[in-house]
Image (cartoon, rainbow over all chains, first blue to last red; front, side, top):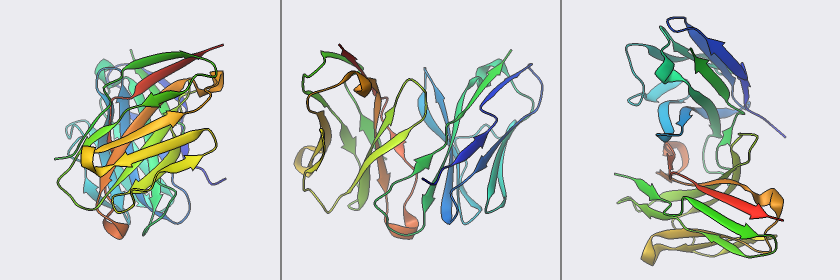
Length: 115
Length: 117
């Protein structure tokens, strides 16, 4: 089965450090999402891309977060500087172009802990 | 604006019982998709089903069935003869648009289902 690959799986970092999370979408998928999951807020959209162009990043704190797709096989989410309130699970998901019955496929997530 | 409400925060059942998870959605778009995802204790989000707004036929897949009713803006999920392995958080989600304009997912807060042996 095709998978969305996220790295790292777990990350513990100190407040103020830069964090980079990576996502490899499924080959051929042209839509990529970044979601954050916390107990308080549930699943929140941070950013999404179609054909590598950002469509919506209004859910992202612009002063410290940035999302990019350097190429079709890699999406990155960076936090600089990180803060304890950024502790969460970050999911990447990808979806195919056009209509499909398969929905979006999520990666296993990156569990971020900022101490 | 789009919104998904899952009023049941937690449900507990005993194995072999049937259980229904409720989902109510809001949108003014006439073209939209509804989804269910499962998040087991391991944490990944597993896609279960997608329905489009033009197809109100109920869907059955093994022990899982989905009831889509536009009249009540609901897309409920029933597990028949529940099993311990069904224990997970279940999310309902909504997306508007179609094809190449298919947009973001709006998630409900999820329902924690616990199935006891």
